[in-house]
Image (cartoon, rainbow, N blue to C red; front, side, top):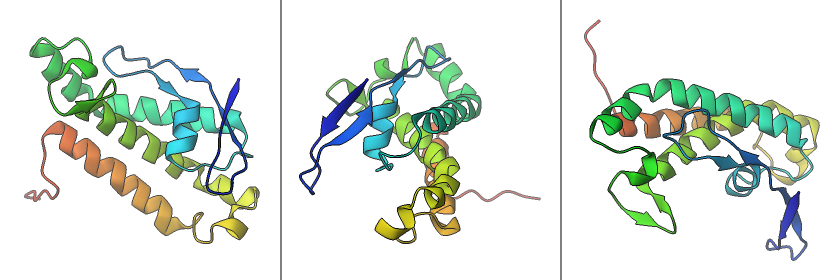
Length: 157
């Protein structure tokens, strides 16, 4: 199922409205259309490829955030959406951070696909290694924050 939105060009963009059930009940379920829209993915990219990247990123984030889940469940919160903090339209800071991390990781995994669909002609530099590294850094930074770590860590070797 798809739904359309009119971007600046005035032409409708068809996003793939495919729900993605999260394997960890604490975290929110996601939707491929939201991922496509928020991360400006090409509409002509194969939805199956995007789903695989999204599922892999969800699993990676869930594995990395096990302590965040345990800490919040220990405080009595059954789901991320229940954790107090800034919120709007059914979203709170923790669920928003989770989505940022997952969507950034998934898009980083898809960077190689951009070259195969002609994205370079419309958005030069989008498929580069710098963009991929920036997306992975964004995800790592958000997950560090979710874990309660600062932006920079210094460790004794």
